Image (cartoon, rainbow, N blue to C red; front, top):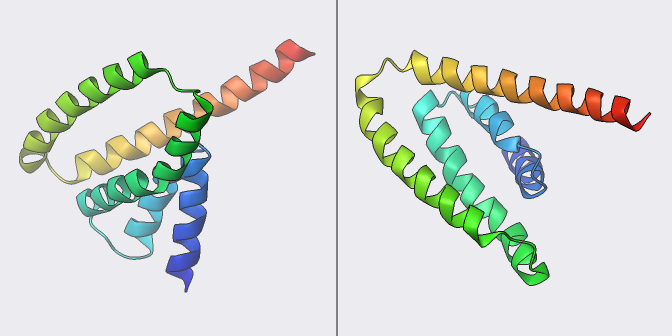
Length: 122
């Protein structure tokens, strides 16, 4: 039951653009004992499925920048191909530490931006 609740909450956060994927990877690795690479792959598949509903809403509202979507898709595809080939030659702890660092940086940037955007409004 806990898995269903966590899955629902993470999907909701992803659909809203909050970034629940990092939380989902943490849940998979710490609570369900997934390996880091498996947790990231599961997170990616879950993310793709979870955001489809919000994607169709954005299409209907015509709030998408198609040039950015194409650019990010091309760059993301190239990066995925390169790094999926390299992952077999890297110590499994390195991606785990890199993900943790990215989560810390992303969270810090969000807090920093939130703090300074509030100061600018005052």
